[in-house]
Amino acid sequence: MARQETSPLRRGWTTGACAAAAAQAAFAALLTGEFPDPVTIRLPRGQQPSFPLALAEWRDGGARAGIVKDAGDDPDVTHGATIIAQVAWGAPGSGIGFAAGEGVGTVTRPGLQLGVGEPAINPAPRAMIREALTDLAEANGAPPPDVTVTVAIPGGEALAEKTMNARLGIVGGLSILGTTGIVVPYSCASWVHSIHRGIDVARAAGLDHIAAATGTTSERAVQRLYALPDHALIDMGDFVGGTLKYLRGHPVARLTLAGGFAKMAKFACGHLDLHSSKSRVDPAMLAELLAASGADGSTLAAAWRSDSAGALLDAAGTWAHALADSVARRAREVALATLSGATAVEVAIVDRGGDFLARVGT
Image (cartoon, rainbow, N blue to C red; front, side, top):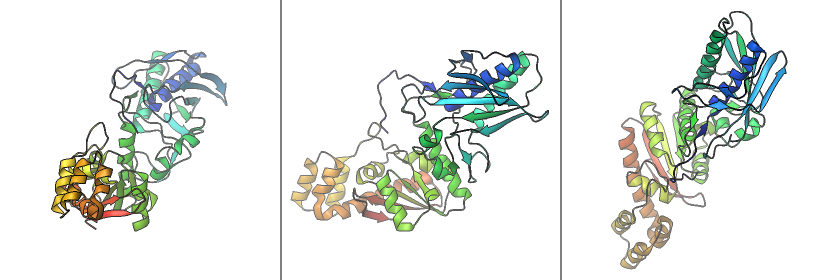
């Protein structure tokens, strides 16, 4: 995922904020007979955005409202999706309950913030919806609401295939997410959130070995090597620091960190964010490691002329595996220092074809 540094980038709204706005509009219709359009909600940090309604209808004894999600300039998979909330009266004293409609997933594995069998509507969006409906009832002189809020995202099951939900044990669709209600462009908050929840699911399943990889090729290589189940695999992308720091407080017995040569070379230099906008490969460090491996002068000269980590690895020739091994050892030292725990760490460097260039700490 490319992260752009130009500014200003337009912010957007989370699925949780859209669901809260839709639920508030639908509940207002139940109370007053009219759908407010636009509908204004209060976010956890006090902002009060207004949302135009894309849908307002009565169905199956309840009121139904929809909001088209605008993720701003963030490349969010749910940008442009319609977030629908149907609100129907429940039994007296039942309070506010939640259900998954079309395109919203259901939790099937322990370890998440929600119990098994619960609709994948995260705690923060639930709190936003509860507050919005409770405040609206009070403003209209009504008692605390006894309603069921069913959230749906048409086409959400297909969109969920582009997310990590299946690996987390969320089946049937997307999750309703968002802590603040606001999407910050290219913050990759949802990716980091998925890393953390993936670790939680693996720990809850009692797995003693997980693998965190920078990309698909390295992930598949490690999975083949150890026959790991899907929920033992963490797609950490560039966020090795976020992965290790979370594992520091939520440890596992054994961790394999896997990635390509360039990413691991950055990590070996101590960089914890491996994106090209945040860190660079240090050619001097790589040349020093190559020299220490015993490479001859012509090889070293070719390495110094290389303009990328991949080109330098190619220039290393017969010393390529020795160089990769040295990088993996340094990367493992960084990982152990960042974890500061008892987790056994292996670092694996994988080439473009999916073969191992180095494995240290096996």
